[in-house]
Length: 339
Image 1 (cartoon, rainbow, N blue to C red):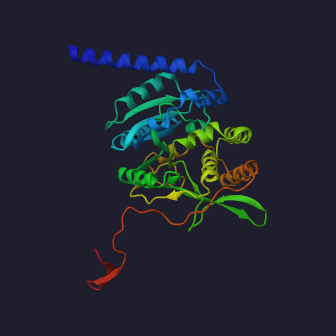
Image 2: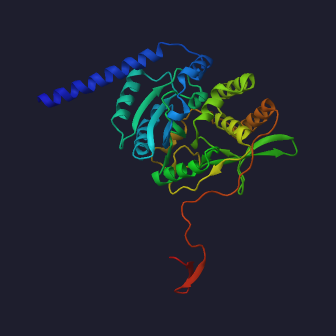
Image 3: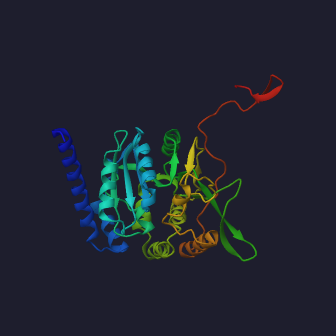
């Protein structure tokens, strides 16, 4: 083996050793979610608003399953290639993952950036879904993109969503939407899909201002602590709760953007045989039977805790192209006039 190869191997081993040391350091601490939140929420750990960048945003990818690691690494690298991404934080929410696996992942992420944005692994001390909304001191941008490790979004759509957020910084911006509604027979709130309106943006792809992370994790007193506890018990509904928090603040619904190309590997409606089935069963949120009923129960409980229903409907979606919509007859067929 040549001197160059030896040096390269030593460099790799040293990198893995340092990553492994940091992982062991984290895993030897036993912190409950309230302790973590209190530490992060302390004013001394929050950057001054005037120091936050507004020309870029931070990507927060939630990761949990080792079977998704190749896909996770690819998604993180894709985000890093965008000039409007300041950094990519992979929030690893599976404390039982072997330290050596995490060390290898940390190394792979650190060398996979395809742009100026650094990619960092942030191992979590717990598997709490609430942790994806912690206002971490390492987030130095006004905007954050909260997303999952099984959804690939083209960069044109990502950058369009950021432009729309800059024009509407108080709103939630997303691609995947759902609705709340009332079951008139049972007199209960339900979680559903409407063809012409929506009131909930999913965390598969959700852009928001950094301040909402603080409101979710640090504000709201006892009622918010109770609702975050519900999220931990159900391992679900953190996306619904952040929609409640933002709607309560803005008295407005979220905004949906049209996407150029989105591949949702975790959607159970996939019928492919290219490994998607393994990805679909490996998520952190509970996907047991009566999924919609459980999420409807979350809406009911959040409504009770808030004392009112803050969710508001939105209509339509924002599109990046405003081409001709009129039809003209060309060659005996009707086509768009500008085609």
